[in-house]
Length: 320
Image (cartoon, rainbow, N blue to C red; front, side):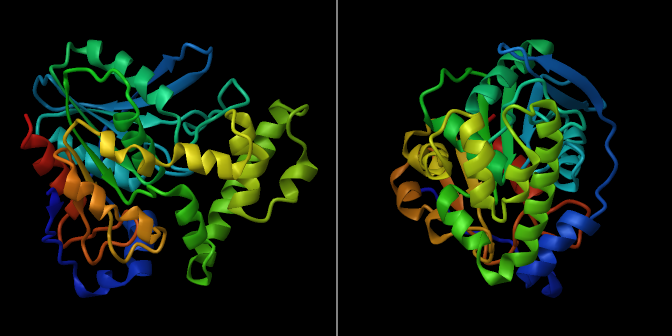
């Protein structure tokens, strides 16, 4: 019954969902990490950029990190985790999803919450780099959903994969979309919509036959953006079809790799269905931890590292 009791007790001010979420995203200053970029050529002719950082001593252990919606490998939650694992003798491959590394990708498609085929290629590319014997993967938010789907959908997983961690993960994509539409999340939603539309305007300049400025400007919600672009560009009928087929909630029961999901109870981005206690109770491999606090990708402490950075290392290390 892998339901885990959480020991996370934040400083008083960070018990507030908004403060925890905003501070972690905009104001947190993790310890610096030196990253070296590598371009990975994909089988379909596109590319993904990986930002590597390394332990000070030789290591056969590698952590792959996956960012969230409109994120990249330079976000504080990525560099903070990378630094923490580097100082504990892990090399780190921080992934920038297609179109997220500061340069538009080559194809009309980009990334989405269910694009596990990209993670499969990344894993296949990363393992031989240093003949790694130990692999772990950590995904945040959208990247966490992609990771959980990858683990449970029947892929041929390498024996080097020892454990995985997903943080602040919308396991039910449609449920989370409905939560984001609530008034308390209006500022977050507006920010996402603004950034996504600006990216679509840029993409439309490269692919004018597929995407026009007028279509983009008409989008006033995340659902309309996913209807217009995300679903169609990635082979789904519409946004609801994309949410249904890509939600990791459908795959959790099939996970055979030791996997920890940490979703804060006060995460305003997550619906009740994103706390899959019944599945965790039945699974020998899927562990669920639901702290009362943490916000969305927050989990701030009176330390340089976050609670989830410490928990990720602790959990993964217990399976080596």
